[in-house]
Length: 116
Image (tube, rainbow, N blue to C red; front, side):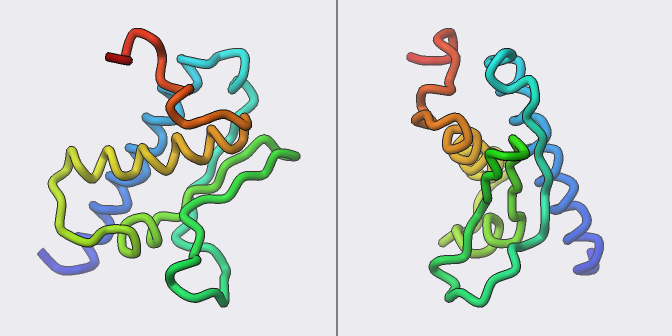
């Protein structure tokens, strides 16, 4: 597989996981998140060092979250993962972004029927 195809497949998987996670949260919190919009960008515009590159941003005025693909995929992992682990990793940042937008703890966004 050439690297261009791998990147496209990876970006497609990433976008699908973000969209599915946002849909899940909107269904779980319909009143709180009805107006939520999201976007995915490859990376933020930043002159910061690698350790401080944001993985997402929150815009309360627009009620929007922006998820940054490259920092999540490349700067946060310390090992190779399988697809399920990758999904959980991406979902974690979507939950964090939405929680910040709503001024909640990310764990509070998990519906009761999914808690153990």
